[in-house]
Image (cartoon, rainbow, N blue to C red; front, side):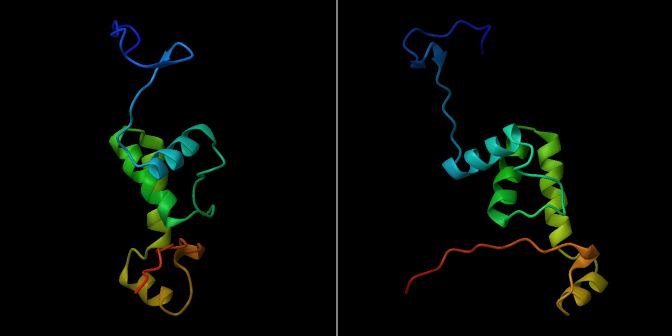
Length: 111
C-alpha cells in the first residue's frame, strides 16, 4: 500500500492515509489490543472472556495472525471439555485440566 501511489482524493490524517476496516468496532478494539498489548490476551490459564476470544479468533483468522489465532483456540480448548470423561468431570463443578472456564457474557433480552 505504501509503495503503490495513492489517489490524492483519499482522506488523510496527519499525512497518513485512512484505512477503512469493515469489522465491528468491538472486534477491532479487542484484536488491536491483543496485537499491541501483550498482557491483554495472554495464553491460558490467564483469565479472559468469551467476547474477547471470539473477536480475536475472528480477526486473527481473517488477517492471518497465526499466534493470536492459536492463542484463541487454546482458550477455547481450555474452557471446553475435549472428551466424555472431561465433560462428566466438568458437570460435577470441576474444571477440565485444572483451568477456569471462560466467562460467557450473554446480553439480557428484554421482554
